[in-house]
Image (cartoon, rainbow, N blue to C red):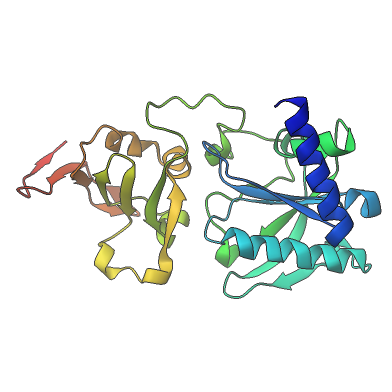
Length: 256
């Protein structure tokens, strides 16, 4: 980033803090899940907030949650005691963040404050509403225990763009793998845990392909399918069948 661009963004952050007491940074992620974090609390409370993953929550709703939490904290509520409901997305509390997470993910805050490390608290959903892209930041980063975040430092190994989003369902974000995959266009995918007609519209979301692939490496088989074709398989808790080919034009099917 050029010095002029850097100064522009720093001025924008400063103006937002002066106007509303807080700036919220939204990072689209690419090969890593989306996350949001605050800049502006450190001056008052000596910590910031980070809201990682949970792609089922829209950015606007996530920003609203951060703003409300920040207001409560500046009024004197302790991080350990804070709990907020955000219907229909669940109840949220705060958990500690290890520096191996905050350092690489909160670069904007580090740059703004000219710090090497900033203390942070993680916005954590209740167990019922948690999804595969929500890490446990209380512990040091480990790609084995947090596979969805394994490309946090780069190294995306696939030929498809890392920022592609696919239409997927809530069960997949809960850890149930894909049973059908269709590639409608070059960068337009649909991945469902069961027949799409059975899934309520409110349980269908745009999800980063990288998130699903990191959690379920067997999805590598779908990366080379042609536009207008797809794969399907039996997927049960105790049995995962082989991928079979589906082609839209003639509905031919064969094992793969």
